[in-house]
Amino acid sequence: MVRAAALRPLNVVVLVIGLVFFVATSFTWWVLPLTLATYAALVALGAGDPILQRRILGRGKPETGQARDLSPERRARWLPRGETREKVDAALAEYRKVVAAIEASDDVTRAVLQDTVPRLDAAADRLVDVALQREKASETVRDLRGKSGSDTGPRSENLQKLEERIEEADAEISATSSELLDLRAKVVRISIDTDDAQRANDLNASLDELNARLEALGDIASSRE
Image 1: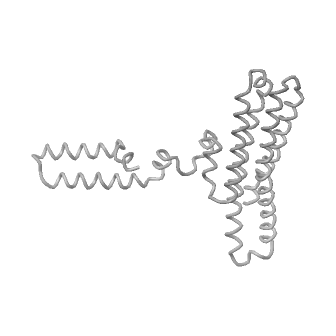
Image 2: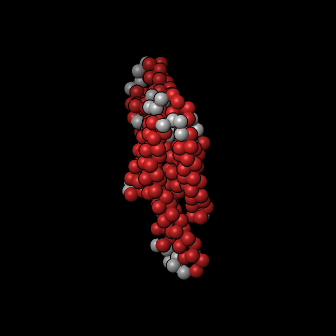
Image 3: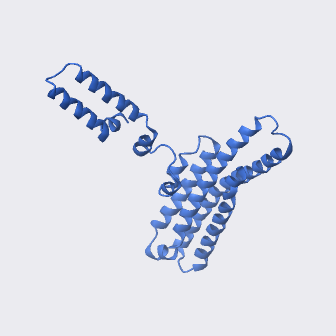
């Protein structure tokens, strides 16, 4: 970060102008320390700039359009460390193994499963979406539960419904890893018997069902509001 801040065009320009002015004024003694102090201050400020940190280190959550350009594993790093993240990491590991099994198959198998990888990608992205929304919803519940008046009236009812949605998300996240493990076994069976197109159809149907369940949990955010 310090190197990136030091090489920022604006900071370099300030340094160059200061040095040129130092030479132009016949090496007036106070120009050099003032220039260096200004440059150092700009570098320090730049090193703590969250925008620069996001660009250089990949930290922070980009805008929605940019988030879709990231892999689900990269987006999963936004999750706080804990049980939910562990489950998501396990599910994504299985997802990558299924994709690898398809890519390592023969040409005939890949042709049969040509529609499977996009479905897998969609399921992985939706899984991370659910997990991120689940964590936000959980944070909201913890925050509101600690406030007076939260245990009675409409707010209490809304919190209870939100907690139910969080439990549903937890169950689906846990089930997804197991389901992806089963899908990997199905891919291997299809690669052995490529004449059975019905197995490929069944696999894609399973993925469609998984995507539909994950998408149905996508309204956790609206429930949280």
